[in-house]
Figure 1 (cartoon, rainbow, N blue to C red):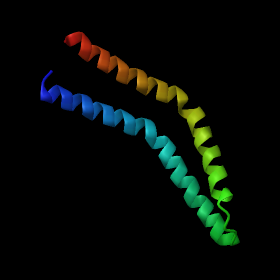
Figure 2: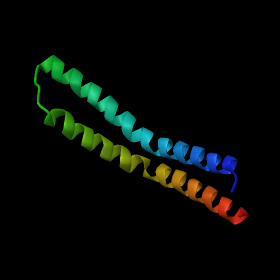
Figure 3: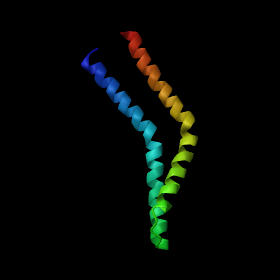
Figure 4: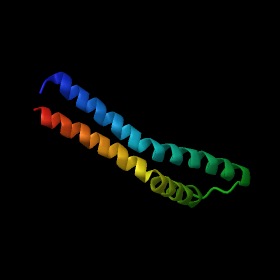
Length: 87
């Protein structure tokens, strides 16, 4: 295994991890900003008002993105298995 092929594997791994994590992170940030706006407008500062909607939103996004996440993971594993076949 050459350093170039190892670098390619690391690059593809990081790209796949970013693809898989980005929907969850984006939804948590968007929900957090919206809840901060609501808290500022209503002047209610309670930690559970931001935590519970974030958990619920990330859960919904997880359910909606599950087929896509499985497909991205399968593509990654097929890529890795093809590399091992070449060795």
